[in-house]
Image (cartoon, rainbow over all chains, first blue to last red; front, top):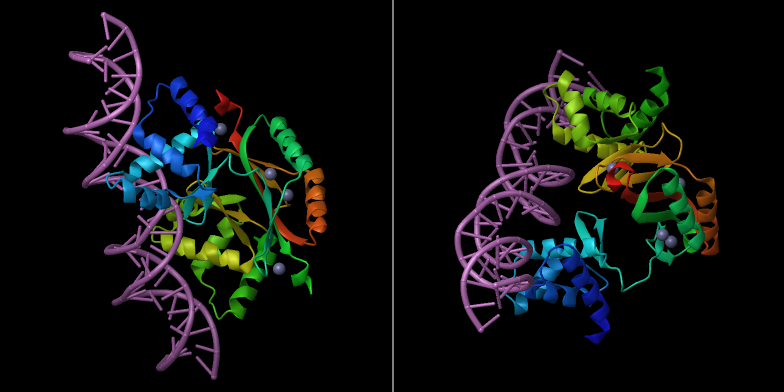
Amino acid sequence: MSRNLKEFAVLKDHLGKHQLKLTRQRERILALFLKTEHVTAEHMYRSLSKRDPHIGLATIYRTLNLFCDAGLAQARHFGAQTQYDNVSHKRHHDHLICTTCGKIVEFENCEIERLQEEVAAKHGFVIQTHKLELYGLCSRCQR
Amino acid sequence: MSRNLKEFAVLKDHLGKHQLKLTRQRERILALFLKTEHVTAEHMYRSLSKRDPHIGLATIYRTLNLFCDAGLAQARHFGAQTQYDNVSHKRHHDHLICTTCGKIVEFENCEIERLQEEVAAKHGFVIQTHKLELYGLCSRCQR
DNA sequence: TGGTTTTTAATACTCAATATCAATTTCTGG
DNA sequence: CCAGAAATTGATATTGAGTATTAAAAACCA
Ligand SMILES: [Zn+2]
Ligand SMILES: [Zn+2]
Ligand SMILES: [Zn+2]
Ligand SMILES: [Zn+2]
């Protein structure tokens, strides 16, 4: 648990700055959230219900959105559901996706990231997050 | 209307190859679709209802998905809604999207496009298409 | 034109996510 | 520590985008 001290501190800091309170539910939801790389509200609900049968689904949603505000989580719409990604768990990366076999390759390119900031600044935007997906054919599927 | 002959031909070709029929609704929805760059099903429904009060919302959804199959449209999830982009009518561009007010700014950056090709080549991929979306706050919403 | 197939439109439905609100918990400062 | 103010919870109702259903209408084709 000591590994997660930093994330708990970030949450407490955010709560303090916004007149919000630290509750048992928020602690438990954060503890579970930090164990996985990405999660849906429904998935957390099922996991938490085993130990805490009276946890409310609305509380999960509210708390995950709170984590997004605090910068601990990042919401990502995937299909019909919303995935909440653990920001501290994995480094940022983008995706190369093969349209034939479905292979996914992760990559990161600092220069592209930098140019994105540049473009945003040019239009007066401040970037919160972004999505870059390259669709094409992998080497095997080009034949 | 003669400007859109090409897109109508693409639709007819797709219909012919899939045992589908050309209907008045599909013609009207395509005509309106080609006039805008980004559209939601709800937005088209409101526009079309003025002239054609008995148009069905389900028909809009079905037809926009048909356009995606035919390669005329590209679906893009933003927040809770699905945006349908006009693929054939406009030059390639990417998007800056304000997460507060929904404002969308189009941009194109040759350097980013070139770096994408570079990244893909490094992993043996050949790019067919890509999606780049920068989410953040526009200048007005930063307050 | 008639018959077959597809499509439409109205409606019901699904399901993720949010709003409501009385009861409970947290915090504060005396 | 305790009482009161403020925030939070959880049960439930509601929203809203998108899909399924189905009888009636339209399109196609010979
Ligand atoms: Zn990136
Ligand atoms: Zn492949
Ligand atoms: Zn691009
Ligand atoms: Zn804005």
